[in-house]
Length: 223
Image (cartoon, rainbow, N blue to C red; front, side, top):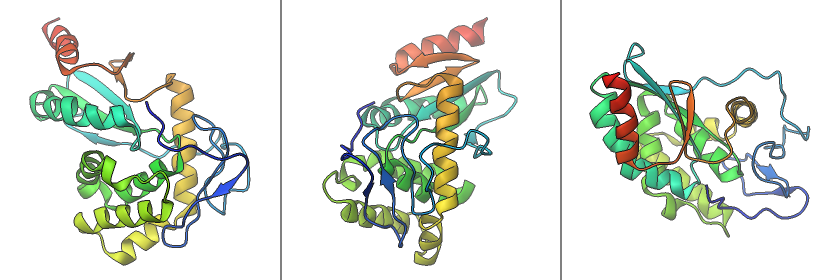
């Protein structure tokens, strides 16, 4: 994954989304520094309850596939456009693959985007995810966090979210904490060192082309 943000030394405050301030330390990646004014501790809570992921397809499908991705990852945006859409049409929608989307949070902008996506609930989640990846180069402004916040709000409006709903979601420090902690726990548990990654029936794979993924899936279905 290409990490979009370059974080300054020590704790820095980024622009607020609906009054919610995000902070990050000079270290990105798993174990990132606290997010939000409510997060005074410097480490994730290892005992925190994990946020449930969103899923697509038939839970009884013969293949279980989990994607680990970050909203600010350029390779993830390419994966969404070049691989996921084909995967969904050929394998998820046809009942061959049960798909789980695991959010990985290694920078504050990604957490903002995740809070927005989850604001739409199950009905809107994957639609907002699609917009976030398709418009990734437009909404991310590495030099202007306030502009990034405005861009994310516009995506929310496009998806049908109200201002009140976005204000509530984007000021939810407890949710930000839980998302960060869940990401840390999942990354450690499943050995995620980069995004996108995929777990296919318990076996971890790095980013790959659709043709390679199709080869793996077809071999499993044939066997």
